[in-house]
Image (cartoon, rainbow, N blue to C red; front, top):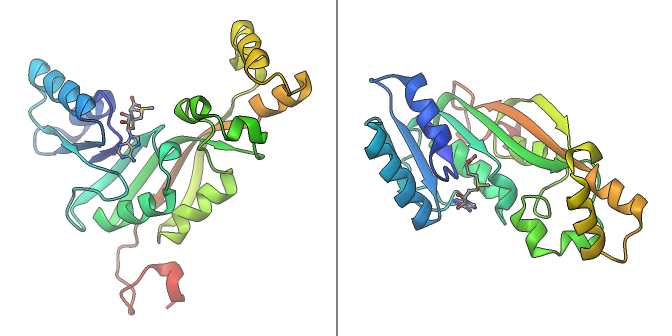
Length: 211
Ligand SMILES: C[S@@+](CC[C@H](N)C(=O)[O-])C[C@H]1O[C@@H](n2cnc3c(N)ncnc32)[C@H](O)[C@@H]1O
């Protein structure tokens, strides 16, 4: 199992128990500090079937067709090349392998001032794609049976009064309605997709030429 953007390793540690002693879990993260932290936690808590590799999810340090399943939580939205991330995920999966990602997406574009805000990018919001674009990127990479298996809106109730006050101060040009609309445009989704069992006659992704 492979975890894209493994951070401090918590999902990899949960996966470690699911794959059992015969299985292996690889976490990839671009931040040396996260790799160091996750590796230390693995050692301290005896997760011997987990390893963490430094790398970019747009150029995975993982061999072709070598993993059974890929998970990722709140990471792909941070990538500047999401299409490439899904192509890489497709490359490293074995035929029949599964992708299961949890991420933030948008139901409508954010106001420009929010979309350009680097802090909003770091908060996993400004880099988020429209839901339709996100699903299209997964399908364009070659995945089949792409489906949303969970979805939860980030309605206004998700934002504390303090956070909304901070947002008003940060974006003084936005009306209360515009702020509410921006906050309500964010969705948390869980998406799955599968890499076909059989390689197509042409050897390329199923969406490439339909053969
Ligand atoms: C919001 S945290 C999520 C961490 C973890 N998945 C979790 O749920 O706790 C995002 C993580 O993705 C990593 N990350 C962001 N962009 C990345 C990229 N392009 N390649 C590899 N790792 C990336 C960051 O270093 C960070 O550890």
